[in-house]
Amino acid sequence: MTVSGGVLIAIGVVSAAVAWLFLSALLHLPIYIVVPGVVAAFYVGPRQVLKTQQRRVEDQFTDLFPEAVDMVTRMVRAGLPINVAFRAVGEEAPPPVNRIFSELAAEEKIGARFDEALASAADRVGLPDFRFFAVAVALHYSTGGNIAVTLEILSDIVRKRKATRLKAKATTAEVRTSAMVLGALPFVVIGGLLVLSPAYLAPLTTDPRGNVIIGLAIGFLAAAYFSMRWMMRRATRI
Image (cartoon, rainbow, N blue to C red; front, side, top):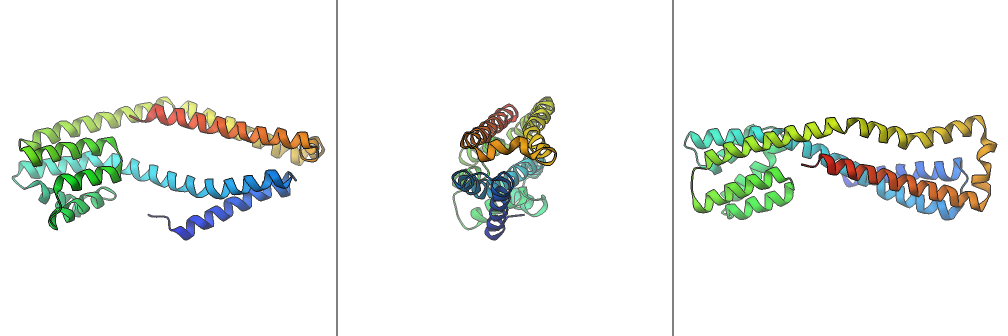
């Protein structure tokens, strides 16, 4: 499912409104802190939605891609041309794999160079597994050879890479849980203090030095979140 521009704008507006309520209505921070926070929320909210959707589609493609390669291999072994195999995968495979193979078959049908279509598809997909596949098929298309054996080896490699990624995610599961707990803890504590003892936090909102402390705290929390997220993504990107 593709998120429309109107939905993204709505998400940005809601994110900005939540940021304004938290920074202005709840913490009573000055305008020079509220405005940058609202603008940042308007930008970050839709961006995070898009990145989440992209990761979901990439995960689905990675899960289904080995089966698509196996399907192409079986058809090639049966004597079908590889462009016909691509067309069949586009018709029979589940999304999002079918869309890529359908586009490749359509481009080849209208006379586009197959190697250029494969390179363009590899750039759109942006996944290493599909790049390996595109290079293997393009070499076969230009030089010939037994593509079925190459695709069988590639399918095995893709499955092993998938197993390694799953193992890495399982290994870092505890770290991800700890990161989420540590990231949520300051907000839980602040929420509890606002309910139980609002006067305790009053200097942070009424004193200019308190405003600086809040700004630094938000900045450090954001830096820590993105640093941990970057390290975990690096650990599971194989």
